[in-house]
Length: 374
Ligand SMILES: *Cc1c(COP(=O)(O)O)cnc(C)c1O
Image 1: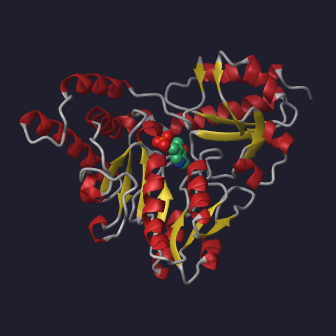
Image 2 (image 1 turned 90 degrees about the vertical axis):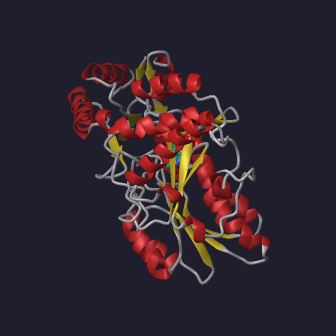
Image 3 (image 1 turned 135 degrees about the vertical axis):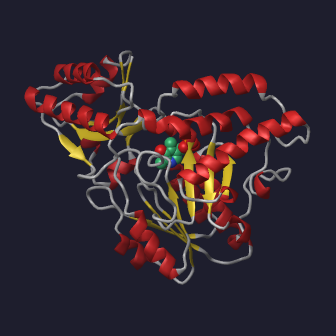
């Protein structure tokens, strides 16, 4: 099986699986326990907290562990908005139509409870411009939530400039950095963000663990989504999963030994030159500056559904659409770029990782050639 789906989940790194195996066996104690075994587990957790904080230019006291970026998005957006709704206020949230599905469902839910929501629309490349945020700000805006890198196109939003506008207007900015973390620069001060969502399995770590960065956590009134026994500064209840967090720390430590700009560029180049040589018509979506390990391609003369069916057992690819309730709906991201149903169905998201080789690209090109007429 050739894996071209690292944006859905990055292949687990060898050091990570080794760390998981070891900690699963040795660190079964509850890390909140006050005996030595508990303390040893807690130490591993605090090591990861330190490493994570350092990797984004934050303090360890501003990091909360969660089950992943989905939960973090819930914690931050609901944590800010729900207390205001409960107090009878009418808060306003700014987000965009091409956010990850979870942010859209959180926003829709809050809207149903009386929150005002502005859904910004991207330009044809899939970017949100700082000007749009500026124009959307209102007296009652309590949060701006915009993703750093889009998970279907790889497009990079100008978060730093947007953050500058938000800071000036004294409105907090949240960015979902699940796709950008460790792949491009994600320093919280450079990006001017107050909240950030991270996920371990997008950087070769285990699924089921992620983190929230919350600037100045102690001074904020964030209400928990999961109430518990006081873990994570009272912001997120539940026994911390020592092995998952330790392995997350390992991924943070070694990911950059694997993820290579050079390798990603070469694979992308080889793919595009290969398509040109074959005479396959294609269009690259998302503009010039996208995440190096991602490419979204529309192939107007290719039978992408046939390709996906035919290569189901040999290639792991992602179509620009998601199956829901038996019918294939075009992806909300592509729809927001005004793709029609046909264009969306002819769009492929190909995402690379360190395990991909030139032979993999050749195999992909051979498959595409089989399903292309013209
Ligand atoms: C993968 C992803 C998520 C979901 O993260 P989980 O840790 O799987 O919950 C959220 N946002 C973006 C941009 C993602 O790519």
